[in-house]
Length: 120
Image 1 (cartoon, rainbow, N blue to C red):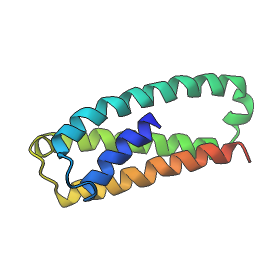
Image 2: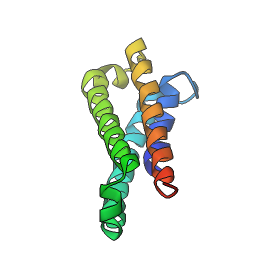
Image 3: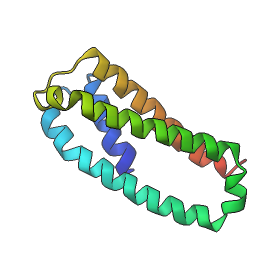
Image 4: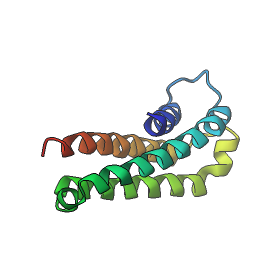
């Protein structure tokens, strides 16, 4: 919840939701929460992987999930590099909205695939 909640709220704000919330303050507050959430999920994910590594290593769904996590992280890093300055001034560009949409799609897909692993 920390990761998708933090990133998701910021993405929704970039897409025009919650216009009363100042973008700069929201980004400043939620980005560290999202990073902490990712680190916590990565650590717990390693423990869960170790519990059933053989089955997960053979799972196509797990492989797809890891690919999407990699793409989502790359999207976040590119966003940060490209738009740090406009974000500080609260300016929202069309490319920022496109990347926010992609971010939401990627992280929600990661969640779905994570749940799907249990049923495959």
